[in-house]
Image: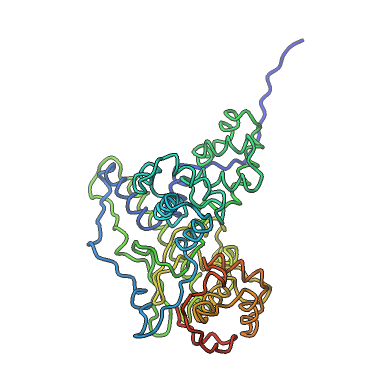
Length: 432
């Protein structure tokens, strides 16, 4: 029997994550501060890249004056923020005083993403507690945290916590989470060999990971301005809202004159940064154009809006919109808001957004009689009279998200009861 050699031609399609594409994705999900650090690193390695830093300024967000109370006026309670939510979680655990100090130190270490920004030994030193106690308190916080993934130390732990909650934490998923670097580079076959599982099993786990939230902290408080300089500025000029990049937060980038090694890489990076800025500005303009009522009236006027709708309007992929808005802040006359928090679902078809309902609920609580606070049932009745029917269990859920304790814990001893205003009218509540 003779063997024969055959030549065949096959055409296949394969998606490869190139170095340039990986860099583009990284820049899309990086805020102004992170982009500045990245460009500084690149300029230090490539002499053909010229980085001009903006003059140092002390950023004073306009929300400081916008939230200033009038003389004799009590400030409204804040809408939900990551810090207030995390502190309420620490309080709900009923920790001992030493453990409570550890919990507060962990809350102080939270980044806007919801991850811990400091290593546990540094947190233990700050709290004056043994490292093993910090690990114990952290485990309790991670087990009770909502949304799941808060207090994670890195991306892998954040996704692992969500996989465990979803009941999807099996050996292949553990192998994928252990080598997220290979996932980012698209080396599925190598990851499958290391995990000793079929490549299809790896792809299935990666598909599940895409349903998780890598930055669970960014969905909080649209009014809690970040302490850093915002990425965007929104202003009303001649009756029209205009959005622009905050150039004082970004260094300018150019390529050195003449010839030299690294010029091609420098030009490519300049184009990537310009593309990132253009995409960010385009997405922000579309978002704020849909939420002009919130810019004019405050968060109570937030309209239901999804990332899929914005992506379809701009002919972008939904993941691109998600990367762009993650951790991005926009400064407005009403405060510095997280761009991601402007996305909110409608509680029922044709009804108000969940964010608007939470804002109205926070106003009702802020305007209630401190000696006779409203129960969840009374709050639901008051919102129904105001034209926003809502179930009592939904009120309880939103109250917990706002970090507001139940009525019996909001009651202030020694306060004199006052005549209650009409429960459906919250117009007297101070605006945020």
